[in-house]
Figure (cartoon, rainbow, N blue to C red):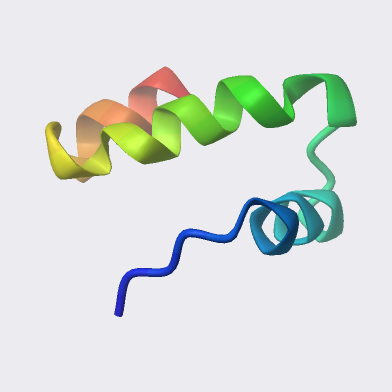
Length: 45
């Protein structure tokens, strides 16, 4: 299931301890999962 809901993702990132100033960077990396392997995205994060 794919879900595109920014507020939900922001909440998940907050729970995971990602600082708010990093949310957009992390979201950009997560968006790349359609084009890159999980390992490539994981390394970027």
